[in-house]
Image 1: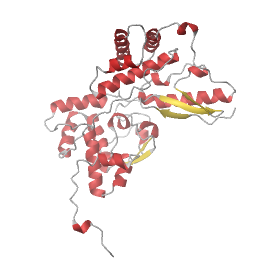
Image 2: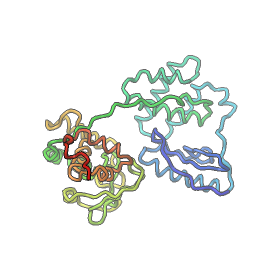
Image 3: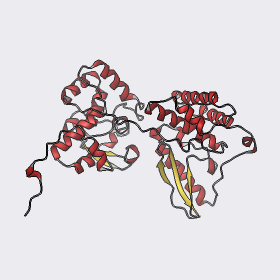
Image 4: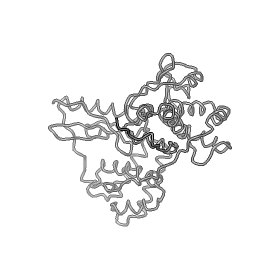
Length: 353
């Protein structure tokens, strides 16, 4: 059977899946259940899911090319007699046996117990979910619980849950967070340098290379830099735009770099990077200690400050867009909302030739 190679994508909950067509019918697979293999990419940390998605795509391609057919979702007679809550418990038990973080699993268990309290007849429907989520006014908390719920329901559907109570449950729109730029950035960076060397390098790269701290920077290896350290080759699998980027490195950052083996992370000096909360934890410690920061200044304030600096010196929104790796000019313009742009003058208006 002829098959175009499966496409790897992410949904809005950062779950990886592959899509492909057989006889004009579209398939979307999140795991290997329907090709008879135990492969669960979304049980891995978010930063590892793309690689696992590539493995799933490869296995699907080989499976279909050899003439095999995609299994239907398994719904056994035993599952037909189970209540929604019982199937959800099976899904929870499967998750608890997987290699996921303790905190993540504790949250799933908490969610299951809350649903158990709400439902009276074992039915888990949209009203059940809405009642649970109504306890979370804050958008971040609401969306976090919703994401965990979605993962649990998805697992339950693989085990025979006949409907998706999450189908019409939308994410809550978050208020735009203001990352206030610095007007004393040199002073702040000097203080951070004394506080922690890794946090200092992270802030330098966030400001000078306009990279995102929690993934793009945290996962950097020495092999991502050019031999003379003047460029970073950022893979599309590790940045928000999903596009490969070549990022120039300013001289003031190069002077702070001491290269090691190419496969080592630049912060951990190990093959693996530090955990996803590494820089967040150090930033909170620094913020509690420092007297230089004002309200709404975060790690991302370095990126906003860098964006304003680029625009002031180049006057080009298109160059800023390229530097930030944005797919849309509108996103880049958000970074200039705090920039005082000079008022329009008569001499700026069109002239008649």
